[in-house]
Length: 317
Image (spheres, rainbow, N blue to C red):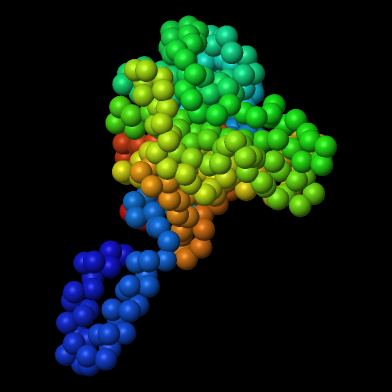
């Protein structure tokens, strides 16, 4: 319900009855508008995940629906490119994903192999980073990546998933996203204790928001932020949504992950949890960690699966 349209008429009734009740109503309204960020518009995003899945997430509730079979290997990031969804595989292949069926078609090898990190589009070009945070230009026709330069964003201090003498594991994360011709990145590196799941930022790589100049390849720090492990990001409805990975366990395959939805202010670095019904929003645990996201729009306005109970919009209920 839109409180701004209902409150004026309600307040008039209260004033006629008692000024005391009006004060109480104003306090209640203030509390409602300051308790975390809410998803005011029903928004959907296509996502790829650590569990080799492609599907749709309802940003309002965290509901996830897989589309098609598991992908041949995990994919990193999702980018709209000439009405197609592009992604890169963990082994370094530029691929096309059919949003209706989930079918993955390999376009070509980037040449980076398992050193590939993040993919984004800005100013009509495709860009890619590696684990040293070098910036590459990518040919969308054959997937070949051409080095532009080192961005200045810190490189990973240790090989991802390598272990230390104290038993901790070296991890890190990055998001890369083009917004209105600007290229933004978040990056951090940290250690994870498999027993306690405690995370400790690496001295070299505290969480920060960067802007990369697509023309020169150089990055500048915009602001620090406090949320370790942002696994993916998507810009929709004027807001920068991020998927924060939360470790829930540790197995032989590595950390067990679920994703929490946050909103990141690109100018200040401030993060705020997205809420529904007064609580934080988590993507369905079956999806694992979200590794890439892109806006999803549907012509009928009723969401991706109007007959699926998790994806009913307010209008179709």
